[in-house]
Length: 515
Image 1 (tube, rainbow, N blue to C red):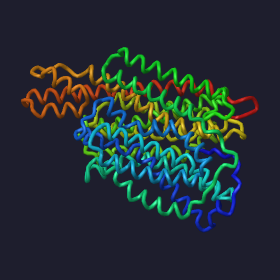
Image 2: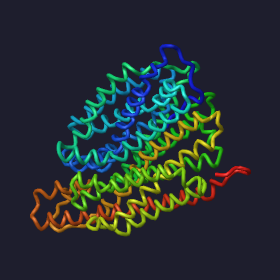
Image 3: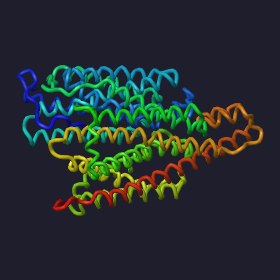
Image 4: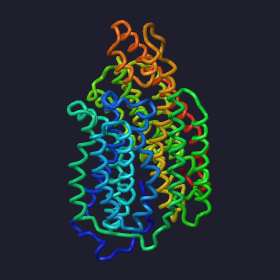
C-alpha cells in the first residue's frame, strides 16, 4: 500500500483527530478499502448474466473486468501526489463521492460502452481513496505501536475485499441481478462519506511533490494503447495494421514516460530503484503472482458457470477454499520467512502456486470438484505467501529514506498485475476459444461469427436454432472454452515457474545480509 510519507507529517490543531475518534477514522478508511477490494473481483461471477443483457464482444468483456484495476494502477501515484498538495481529506472525500456515483452508473448501465466508462470511473475513484488513506492514518495515530496496528488492519482490508468479492457477487447477483453487485456499494459509501466528513482531519505535505501532467498523460495513454492492441489482437485472431500501430504507439509513449521519469527531479515513479536487482525481482514476482491469482479467480468463476453449469452463488462458494488458503498463506508468511528466509520462501511458494495451476489444467473437469480442492488450496496458500513476502522484499530492498517511493511502486505493481493478468490471459483464452470453435453443420456464417464472440454469444445464437444444431453449438462452445481455460492455466504455470527461477537466482542476499 502507499506509504508516501516516511516521517509523520507536521500536524496543526486542525489536522489532528480527537483521540477517541482515531479508531473511527480507521474504520472509515478501512471500510472504503474493503469496498475497493471487493470491486476488483465482485463482477467475476456476474459476468454470464451481464453478458446476456449487454452482449459485449470478447475484448469488451475484458475491458469491463480489468479497466477498473488498470485505471487504479495508472492513477494511484498521481492521486497521492495531488492529495499531498490539495489536502488528503479533500481527496479522500471526493473519492468517496465519486465512488458512489460510479457504482450507481455501473448498476444502471444499459450498454457495454456505458459500463466500461463507469468501471473506469470507479477505478479513478478507488485511486483517489487509496492514495491518501495511509497518510491520514499516519496523521491520526501518533503512537508508533498503534500506528503499526492501524496500518496492518488497513492493509488487510483491500486483500480481504478482493478475496470475498466473488462470494458477495454470487449472493447478490443470484438474488437481484448483476447490477445489484454495484448498487450495494451506494448505501455503504453514503455512510462512509457522512462519517468521514465529520471525523477525518485535513492534512497536507508541507513540501508537496510536483504534479507532472505530462507524465500522467504519457503513462495512461501508453498503457491504454498497449492493452487495447493486445485485446483486439485476441478478439480478431490476427494483428492488422491498426493493431500494430496502436501497440507500437502505446509502447513508445511508455518508453517516453520512463525516460521522462529518469530526467525529472521529482518523478511520479522513481525508476532508479529498479537498479537494485532484488527490488526489480521482487516487483516482478508480485506482478506475476497477483496477476495470475486475480486472473485465476476470474476465469475459474467463468469456467464453473459456463462449462460446469454452476449458479453464481455456487461458483462463489467454490472459490472460498482458494480465498481462505490465501488468507492463511498471508498470515503464516512471516513464519516461513523466519524459518527459510524470504528468498527460498518466495521461491517455494511460487513453485507451489505453479504446481497447483498445472494440476488444475490436468484435472480440467468441473464435474469433479473434489479433485480440484487440493490444487485450489495450494494455489491460494502459495499466492498468499508470495503477496506478503514479495511486498516485504520490495520494501526491504530499498533504502529506508526511499521507503515512500518503494511503497508507491509496491502498490502500483499489485494493481498493474491484476489488470495485466486478466488482459493477457483473457486474450489468450479468447484466441483459443475463437480458433477452437468447431464447424457445425447447419450453422450459418453470421451465426458462427456471433458464436465466436463469446460463450454467452453462443448461448444467444442457439435460441433460434433446431435442437440438434443448438446442442452441437453449445457442446462445441463448452469444449472450446474448456480448452481455452486449460491454456490459461498452463500459461500461468509457465509464468509462475519463470518467476520462481528468477527469485531463486536473483534474490540472493547481499554480503553480510540474510534474506
